[in-house]
Amino acid sequence: MSQTRKHPIIRVSQDVYFKLTLLSEQLHLSYSDTIEYLFQKVSSLEKENQRLREENEKLRKVAESKGLKIKEFERRFWYVFKTILSYAQLRSALGVAPSKEYASKYFEERIKELEKRFKVDTTPLKEALQMLTGNNLNGKKLAEVNDKVKSFLLKFLLGSLS
Image (cartoon, rainbow, N blue to C red; front, side):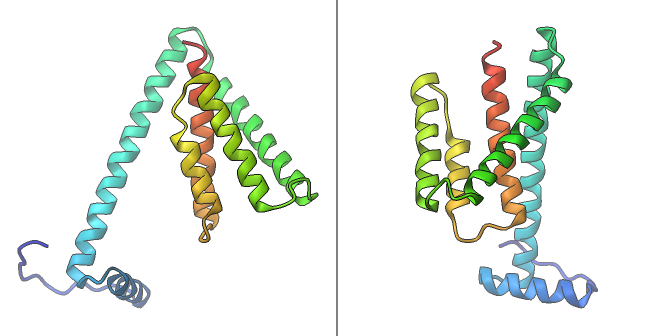
């Protein structure tokens, strides 16, 4: 990947060593290329985090300029979102949605409805749907999906104020 330079050995715990070895094998990269890859990933995540912070700040300024109490709105929105999620889980647990396919189709129809009626870009919701229907959903990915949906809905609601 890049020019090499001799350096002293970096000592890491056995757990880190095994994880680095596993990742190197999965990526088919050498240790140094894997470390460089990880640095690039961290850098891109930092940039994305900064972009999201700036976007959030812009939304906050727009709302405050219109005399809105954005912190209270966000707090209330979060509880509305949690309530909707709880309601959906309860419906699913009670068997109201006959299958995973039915629930996916129902969510997809809501996405299309938003696009058609409000002419908005629903890419975050489509990404959330793909992540939810994928086979490797874990707690971290579920939190990421929740954030995508919540962020989209918050922007959607704030868009109605402008």
